[in-house]
Length: 583
Image (cartoon, rainbow, N blue to C red; front, side, top):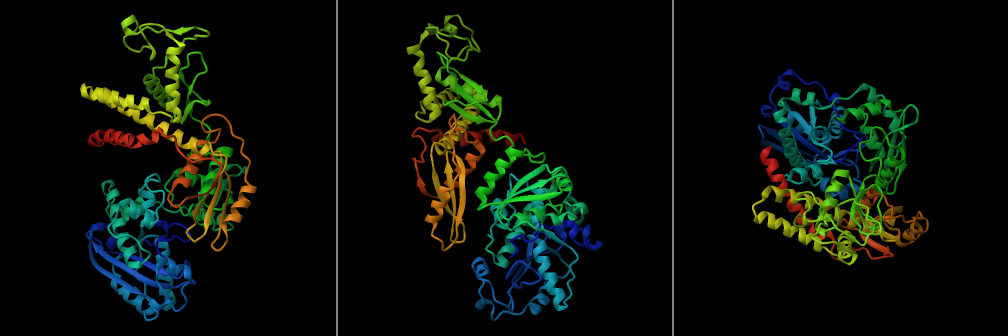
């Protein structure tokens, strides 16, 4: 199956150099054959081809197609039948590989071969050609996996599986684990990747292979570090000469992911440096990807590896808190209180949001210590106060506690999601600025309000999970079993799986009985690390997740900021329009 990686990522040091007749010719003018295989398994030495599909292209146009089933001469495993839909009955009358491979070679002769995960497809084709004594006249190939890893950012393409790239580029033919469909999808992905580098002086085979990363012999020499790792989900830790943790990562297949570091396919210079320093790779096997993600976050926090860019301080961040003064105000703090909003990445962003909320609620922004004072009075402009930059609670007369405390209650209700009256007031203010044609002020107010809504919504979502004493959630594992998670106060307390054919409820009972005891802390998240809670929230709210048991309702407040997220998204889209025009 060409869309499934086996044994590591292809690098262009593994490709033959090719002849001068096409290396400097424009790829647009070169004949390319995009090929995809379906097989009985992942080993070119022991498994067999069941289908070949290929598309011949030149100048961006399709000029020929090749597709046939192949009799593998052996049984097809049930899991492969489920994946591809190719049964033994379908291939019983199909031609043997000797006939098919001879025809394919003639179809593709004189072309550069292209495949998604070319190491897999080229390995099967070369292995069969060698076994059958058939000429295989293809000195060079291109791999869309390697291209995608080099050309696309990880934020843009967290996965470079063919299905993920097809979704990213919205191709017209979707991959189906059938050879011709997958080859057609790969054609579109290949063209879209080439479009990304066309303006960077990459137009020929030589220029493309020079642009893409090449394997480092020093990295290849360390492939043995992955030899004893399991092909299971989990976390891996690269350790250095002093046993220090250099890097932490997660994978659905630990061995395969770690092997990929020794091919030189990762374009990040720091990662190559890290691998050269590494002396061993430890691992923690996990029940499923969620547990691996949580363990990664915790290990990042514990070790703060030098080569990880992801947060190694999960409790860091800024909180907007209501002070415990007689006339409370909002301030930015590292430590949350019961009435708090956060965490927010930067102090500047937190101060801006605090200013928006304080202004909407009419809370004082002055820092005067009032102690046991019976009133607060910062003079408004009408009463002789400053015209610009005055206190948000400025007035033409002193404010007593009965005057002021309803304002505090309104802000507290906004933070907890019990009322969104203040948000309505802020959107009304935006409308007034726009009506007055004060468009620059309106744009600034729009952006500040959008950031405020996003911060409120995130905090309220996470707090809703952290308030639950114990929540057990199950999700299908894709093999008719269940992935299980026991969550307590926003932290993963236990994780496991109930395989197909095993009753899940006894497994749930065992996981709950052995789960970690969580002592809730302070603040809206009760001390839970925000990144871990956010990961858990996404997992339990994605399609397919089912609540098994819960001690408390899992619900957002009736007037939560989540109701305003469509408004916030529209505001962000409006903000991007002038940026795109400027670009």
